[in-house]
Length: 291
Image (cartoon, rainbow, N blue to C red):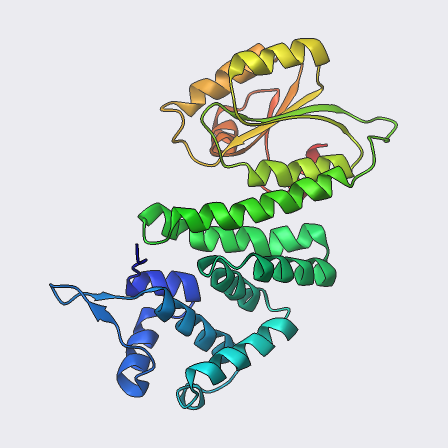
């Protein structure tokens, strides 16, 4: 099925304002929208790729009047050269979008490797991967971008995180904590939790990683056997639970001896309810301070 994007979708994915795209269409004929039976504009993947390449050159101070004279091949070549040399996060995000919609695994891995080499593993995820996921996430929610594309690129990031975690040495800090990490039942958005697992292991703590969609009963059983110091969890949205505040209350009451670190929707609720053993965090630095 061909992906369809609105002007607003293009703005969110390329960073170019809808008014600017309209002006470029009119003045330079850089792109020609498709039309529905009711005369509404829509754009396909080829249009998106073309506009992303234009945005890459435009971000590098090439005038649109000059860009408009380039052939499709010239545009792609010049944008490709800039992608290889640039450390600009906006350009790198655009390059990831191109790789995602083209299902180009080699390109995704090359972009990640270049970012890791230039900025380090942690900054690659905080400065590139998660901003990229936030930008395209809104498209997946509206249905204008492919769920298959989401799974494709997310699993590349997931494999990269797991490989990095496996490469870390065993827990070695003298006053290390015992930490259980998990996502509540029906919560499947795991990349954030995996990233925090990497940080916790890197800081030298012991970790039991239960992953996505963990039943409450299973969490209790694991803790009975392992007696953790800390639980780390979160909800990307409130969707798995009609009343996530009740889940948080149950968590605080059941695990009175543990400190509980929560992110996402649960962090917002924790700030309002003020349980003594529940602490909110929203970034890697927040988590470090709590530990």
